[in-house]
Length: 243
Image (tube, rainbow, N blue to C red):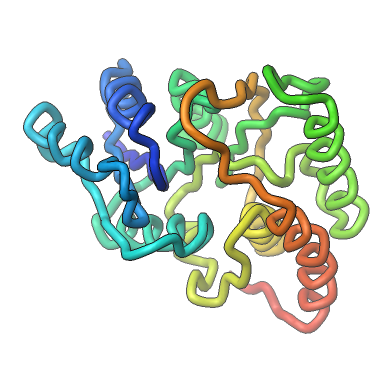
């Protein structure tokens, strides 16, 4: 049975963390969960630790000092997962914007259908977003259109943060050279995976905006993504992508 690790970065997710852990670890398919917590002052880490006895050898936490960015949290989680011999590594939010049941569909897209990277996509079949203001929907949708235009990738949801990687992808990418920390991190990882010639599949999901807690979105994150796409395209002209 392949080992599957769901990496969930957290910062002040007191309202959601217990419920999201329970939802993932009670699925019919067996997953493990790694929480990467950036020093949440609200006690998120303490709640995670209180669940260790309930989920022995399936729930883990890595604690870091201060907010260091989404991208570095995932890189930290990827390295931990590879070192601990996981076969499939997932990215997932803590706030239920990603439906835990869809983890199984992402896993099957890789394990059964042969994808190297499966993306939970909001836009591969229309626009499937719930509870977002129209302005944010349009910004997100056209950001992906912009990314496709600049990079040449055919991915419809390039900023998606709900994904499943086969370990070979993360072993191939030099994680120490990943440049971006915000939403551009999501684009960079997909772009690099694509440039290495790995098979990518988009799995349609319904994305529901968080009901509890506070969004970490900011205009700075979008600015990084807008400029970062140009950087990725230009820098790729001087790189060789050999497995």
